Image (cartoon, rainbow, N blue to C red; front, side, top):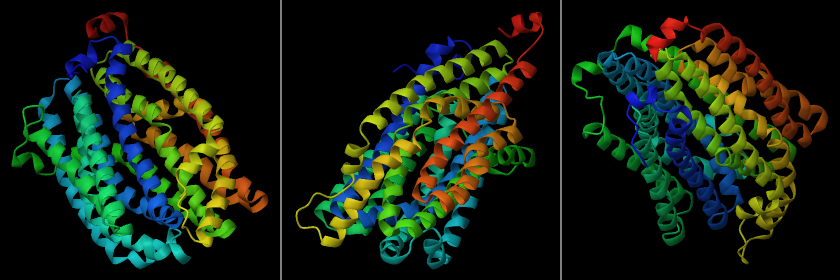
Length: 468
């Protein structure tokens, strides 16, 4: 796979460049998603369905803290991409130093709070009944590794902003493979149960951190730091915060959705219904990996060329990214519509010695998951426009519209829908909330993206020639 430098982001053909950026990002996201997927399959087969539900309860807490690193990373990487595009290397390095210091400060503080409120947070996120104890075991161990996860998420976005997608891909592959190997050793060989699953996840985070640290300490990175770069700069922190708040808000909304969904579904069908959502949630992370890969590949291209005032290339990157992502989303959609029962069956234990209680739970999950999966992914072919449109505003540093469009699907539309529709339609109301929110958010994003492109991506002909 060819190496991409920051300068190439402004010169290579957009289609070729997007493939170079998106393929490594997609592979990295695929491996991370497969990690979550296979991890859940291992847990379901080797520990039980209740363990999948327990992990689903813990995910929003650990992911939120990890998302702090991603938010700081994406916010700062937007600055870095534009700074490199305008040849301001000093600002790029200072921004990276501030990202590191801020990530450490915020995530360590969050871990302390998370440990202090353990017994309150787990039930609040749906860890009730038989789910509570395994969830607590998993949560306590994984939380210690979450600062490493946050640093990984932050560092990975910076690597991609430098135009080094292959290294960013490796940073996602290494911990995922390590986690799965540790799953086999700790759960299957040592029979450590939930503790084994938690330690496997934590070790994966540490492996990721070790690789990213190697990248920035070696000659591969253009951003060479000294201690002075770690000192906070108010203007840079403000911009990181404004842009990163988009990502953080999105993850905060995801955590709220997990809280609401786990509690609503527990009231509708107990632990088994939470297990259904756990499988759906894994597929939401896994199935759309190529679409998310295109989105991640699009960000530095749009940001760099916007900073370099190459607006024709920015417009081309938008249309090309939407086209590629829409094709991939449609392929995913077809697969999910055809094979939902087979997918659900992968997560359920087929051991002959399972208890009657677990057998009944597995039967319930297998009966309810296929219909739910088809409804949840019903609008998948059109989501490319929503994801690329929201990402564009983030790439060019316009935090407010990026925030509003990012929150439109899950915050402004989905949450009200799941609070209203299940009251009248029960379980069906939960699942149809997903495609309705997708359609509404796509329509809104399409309108504002079209308006923004017409307004800002126009420059005088002579200036356009100079930029090229």
